[in-house]
Each structure stands twice: as C-alpha cells, then as structure tokens.
Length: 292
Ligand code: ASP
Image 1 (tube, protein in one colour):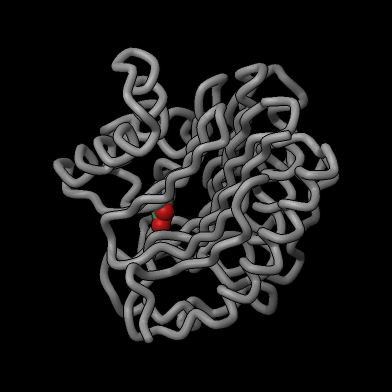
Image 2 (cartoon, rainbow, N blue to C red):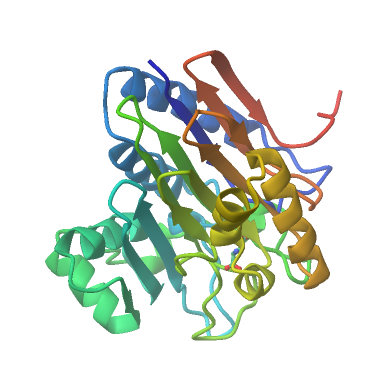
C-alpha cells in the first residue's frame, strides 16, 4: 500500500547555524509518522500529531519556540485541512496554548466555523481541552536559540502533509509568525488556501514570508495548477514559488499528491524538512547541498 509523509520546520534556516537538534528531532519524528501510516493511521491524525510534536519541542518558531511580537506577546497561528472531506479548521493570533494545531483541529471537528481568532480562539481551545500555558515567561524558549533574532524579517513555521493507505490526504501548519511582527499581524499559516491546503489531488503546507503566500493563494494554487493545468506536482510547486518570489517573498512548501509523489522546494537559504514514503526510506535535509 502507498503512504507518504513530509514534515517541515520552516524555511528560515540560515547557513552557519547548527541545526543538529532539529535534524535529530525530525529524524525521530518522521520515522514514527511513517510507522503510524504503515499501521493504517489516517493522514489527518498523523499530520495533527506531527505538528503537535513540532510545536511542543521548542526547536522551531511555532508553539513553544515562538518569539514575542513587538508588544511582547506571543501570538500563534495554525490550520489543518482534511483532503477527503475538505473540512478545515484554523486559529489566528491566539496566545498561551500549548498546541495551536490541536485547537485548529478542534475547530474543524466542531464543524460550525473554519477560523477563530485571538481571545475567542483561546477560550474555545481551553474549553476543548487544549493545554494552557500558565507561565509564558518560563514556557517559551528564547528565540535567540533559533539564531535568527538579529535578522530583520526572520521567520519560521512547522508543517506536515500526509497521504494515508486509504488514499486520503491532509495538511497542517503552525507558526509563531515572523520576528518583530506587530500585535495582531496574521500571516498565511492559518489561512486555508494560502498556508495550508488539502483536497483529493494534493496536500500542501507552506512556510516563508506570509504576506507573499497570501497574495498568491500559494497552497491552493499548487492544487489549481495541477487540476486546471494538468501540471505535475513538482512543476506546480516550483511555479507557485516563482509567483511568491514575484511578490517579494521567499520560503518553501512541502506537498504530496494522491499518487504519493512528494516535493519540498524552497527559494530561501534553507528549509528544515524530512520525508518518508512506502517506497523511500526517511530523508532529513536543511540545505542543498548539505554542508560537509
Ligand atoms: N509563513 C509564516 C508567517 O508569515 C512564517 C514562516 O513560515 O516562517 O507567519
């Protein structure tokens, strides 16, 4: 049976920074996710679990690893989409919950709305059983650890896309957003069609300068190019990143099509990423080529 899984830890990777911990974490996570899919777990459950783990690790700019905005508050964005049903859920500018992606999943499962924001999203998340962060000061890791706090426009995100053995696709994405963002700034990550998309053809999770991914409807555009242009996955993904570049953005995306083909292109300096499929052993990469 065919299954495939790709995860990312953001396109904000910079040469010269040591990503040993992130590489080790992604290697362990992708192996576990591959086993889950081989055991028949759904793509939706696997992308939820992968992103929840990436968030809770503190190793990426999402969940525990997020940086505060210019008002000193951590505001998180996340979304999830089920390709089989086109159901989707998202939270935006939500503070002090451990797993924004699980809050997004709860919004989706509850079913009445697609997106909740700010205080309303937090209240909904807590009522849904998502863990609170009672002491933000001690919970969040300092973003200096990402090595990118000094660089204007730095950013990071985590995401996962999967194809399960039943042939269903799913995608999820979560972020602390761009560094030094103002209060209330929301990027592409929680926007279905911009940062996250899944349907019967393809599942996509994006990372990069969110404004450019919003202005290009990046995640959905991968699907649209495949569906209307009869374009292959790789070509569609590259064309979307070219449009992102035309809108002064850089970043990358991970995607899987309904045949289990994967792609993980980027036009930034690096992208933390890992993949496994039923016909390919796990790979973990940050740069291309990898430093010696
Ligand atoms: N896309 C995210 C945002 O703009 C940041 C990132 O992916 O690094 O909020």
